Length: 320
Image 1 (cartoon, rainbow, N blue to C red):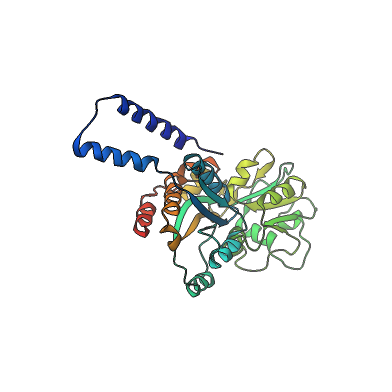
Image 2: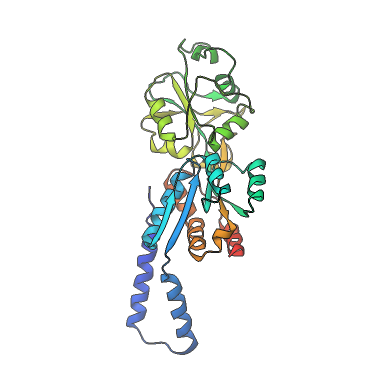
């Protein structure tokens, strides 16, 4: 999942510096400026950055941390995955520098951060297409409408069978796999599809998306949902379900997610950064590295890059 563009850039810079060292010696202001710039390029940091939160954002930040440690081997970057809600709990408790989120922060979370005296800044890092998947052996589900999704996943006191959703489908009980209630993915699905009504009680809930993948791959009558990156990573074992929002069935791809055509399940992904932490030079450097590389690394793990990260980098510079 790793991008090696940063490594290649480092090699290229090293080559340029070597050539400069072999060439004529500059004097005066120009020489001093070059020396300062080179020192800045190669400055090494020592410290730690703690990240927790969304399992959907986790693959991006895990890739960022791996790339960053190549450039900054003395830095200790820990990335956990307790779900968006769990991540905000740690953020509010002052245990982390960065909180990953697959939904915007809630009003009650904002209030708790204010009460704790914690100032923060939101940065969008990528776009995701929440993906509906079924077992690969499922040969009858060709697409689902938003209304069918709601009917399927909404608790109504009955045992849900495929034949209840569309005439001609098998009279087999549907097995449901959903992210847990601490997950921003759960919150998004709950708001957009279920309209904040109870999810079917028979659903298996887990904060670990790999558990959901295993559940769907292990049962021919299963259905589940999670971030697009987890589908991409397991596409040989899963079947993606196109979604019809009233204008024809659309499958999540980089193009349909970025354009918004994959509606209503396209959504932004965020990191929330503690402003006080950014005042530490090493944390600032890590966040800057994250924003500079989020586009490439998001695509590497199966998400969609933003059109530009310039505004985010400018905002970060203002926090320094």
